[in-house]
Image (tube, rainbow, N blue to C red; front, side):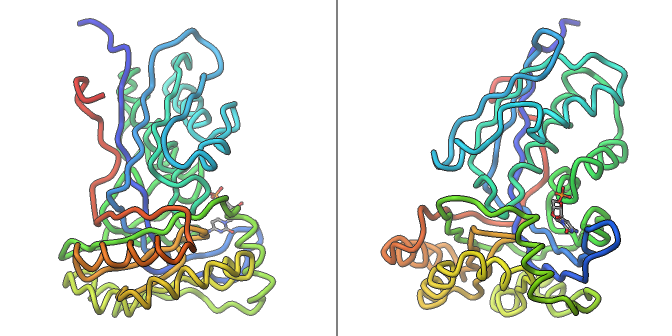
Length: 309
Ligand code: C5P
């Protein structure tokens, strides 16, 4: 059997349908009730056999202002994922990693986490390392709170710091418009602002109406149930996002929230036609850098057949 030389994995972005944030813990993290929903905005990560040593990284696609901010050294979460998997599997890390990006960078849609999850799957395949899904999940949780979810995809609630996942049924296809902003927001900075604004945050609780709307495929009910405790903090750091949210609401969005820690804004649309109108209104408003349309939920990280890679 000839050795594979390259593996490409397609991995989705996420939007948070509910992000309930508790007070800061001793370790600096926050307990969450974090409802992840994978959407059809995909990065493709290709790992290729290379000389042993630090992974070489390259990046393409997306907004230029975003890709310029992707670190191309060992600090990149994808490079750390390759090293962690190599150590765990007892093989030599010897890959170059190419990130073809559609997910906004530092946009609150877990693009860096998605790339790290995809790298774990790609290296596990390339090196025939044989790690189980449970092994990959454990490694993903060590890399970051949002890294396990893109392995799974679909919809799921994350508890703890977000890494303990329970799948949630999704009874329909939901149509989304995302307003991408120039520049990113640091997740840690947004959590810090949250602590400043909400020193008395209550324990995070799941929202049964959201779970019911998701399971029923009921877009108006889901739109009404969307919530994000980090939104106030993101708006405090980027007040202009309020105008983006208002423009999408005025154009008929069923729900409008900052995605995760932002600055991407997410709008739930009734259908494809409504999504087109929301996207056109957002573009017209001049309050965002670009809009993209997507649907959810979608499966998690998937190895592409070699011909498509
Ligand atoms: O887990 P991850 O490294 O992705 O988290 C990035 C930052 O986001 C953390 O350093 C922390 O400041 C914040 N965070 C948090 N509570 C969580 C998840 C992330 O405070 N549950």
